[in-house]
Length: 149
Image 1 (tube, one colour):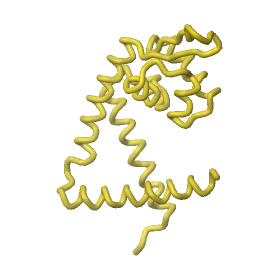
Image 2 (tube, rainbow, N blue to C red; image 1 turned 90 degrees about the vertical axis):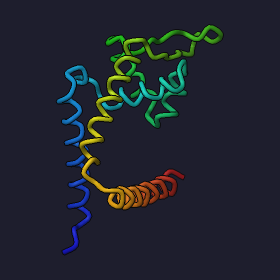
Image 3 (cartoon, rainbow, N blue to C red; image 1 turned 180 degrees about the horizontal axis):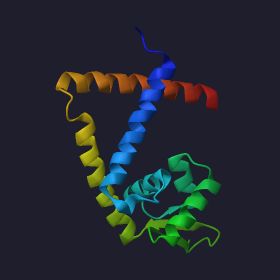
Image 4 (spheres, rainbow, N blue to C red; image 1 turned 45 degrees about the horizontal axis):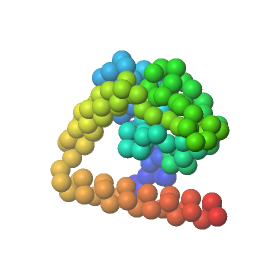
């Protein structure tokens, strides 16, 4: 019997939800941290001191949504926002020491969860899953490109 697309999508979202719950169960510090905030911290860890607009462009989120996330993150001490020295209209964003520590701990937890998720799969399973993920990513990327033009 072939699974319907809806069944497969439900399974994928179920896996994602369970991975999130497994991560949260490993650290109480993750409670209250929105997925988008973790993504912003990851980008800032790689490309610190971006303008809010640059950050919004990199993560493909509306500028207003980034501003909302950053306000919460600044209040929590995860990021530091400062005015650009040359153009005071521009706000630059940097990851704070607390944000770096959170991200380092979060990456360790993510590694633990990945070990649980993928640890029972053999090399052939992992290779097949990788090929399937690539096909899904390619299909979605093509769809987004054709619908965004």
